[in-house]
Length: 305
Image 1 (cartoon, rainbow, N blue to C red):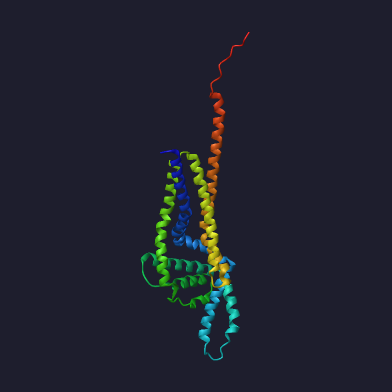
Image 2 (cartoon, rainbow, N blue to C red):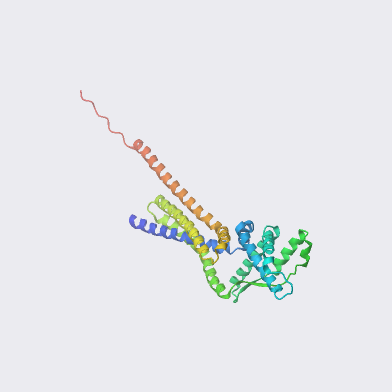
């Protein structure tokens, strides 16, 4: 095989490897990061202390409580106006989001929702995905009793199914999940194999290593840009602007591992490329230093008398 053909094949293999690398990293993050309940709950746990998330949770709790208050006070004689109750309910909900009990409920709720969605994706059942609030209520009740809140004994632990995902959304999500499970494993493997093959067939392997390293850094930079652009698109699609700070905090928490991987690819690629260039420079200096010593000395000339 000629040198030009080897270099062309090496360039094609390395370019394809660098193109698959960001897609493989994103697919692996979705398949093995988001789909792992423990990692998901760990990533979401710090958000219980985020001010934007606490405001959104307080709004949701206050709205739910006021809906129940309106239902129970409707038609009741001498009942207070809902407008007079709403500020107290809002303050109570805001105070609750600052307690350790809220953090317990936050972790339990995220774990329950993630388990329900993941089970529905894997078992292939049809129909909407729902979450039973009884286990979450039981954990909150136990935490309140541990904190010596005696009134918590009267909290009923009832089996209440709350819808999380519709049947149509579940069907679309299942198709994407099946693709991600395959792509999350094989795309990184294919990228590594193509990179090794491209370096192996190259006429100058040091140059091929440099090209693969620079392509890896470029792929990591493109992945960083994709995560940033995806954040803007996600927040722009939200119907209520008030919930965008909370949604942004959730997006940042979930994509933090992916951003770390992307920046690691950038750093690794630049480091390997710099090392390869430095090694090539040292090799040229070594050859230049050795060449004069190995050249044959010119024959001595006889001086004329």
